[in-house]
Image 1 (cartoon, rainbow, N blue to C red):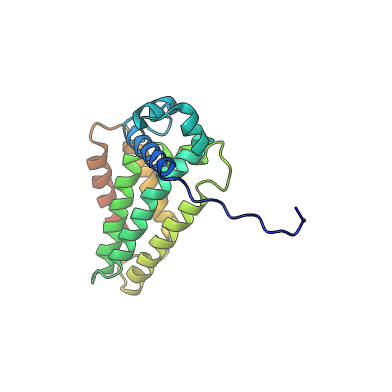
Image 2 (cartoon, rainbow, N blue to C red):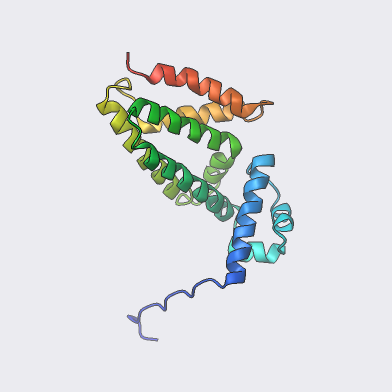
Length: 192
């Protein structure tokens, strides 16, 4: 093949392979919610009804599987942020979205940490950029309405939500405790 010949386009995934990927991601999502990001890959394959080789063919590493689970959920958070851009109260829109991010973080115990630990630096970066961009749009509206204090950034808000999720992930009622702590924190974010 000549050096400058185009790489042939990748073939679309067969329907059965696509179904297997969907089952694997769904099973991994459920197990992460139950046991955290270190859930057994063998258990993921078992719950998905596929063999270990099938799981590894589609997801050659734990990081690749976590990224697939995480990206789907981040896309949902970004869609929620886009929907909230029409909320007439920009401060309320931002706090509603932060609560959704908090619920996501609590439900996905250890996922963010696992994506960053011993991982390819590119893994998780796309999701991070997506969620930061979504938050930036909501924060810009809240800033324009004087609904947030000066110096508040999306990165700081996401760190705050992440810290609250980490602090409550082992609580008996982690989601409720995280929401309560986030309510207290959001009060501190509001403009005076």
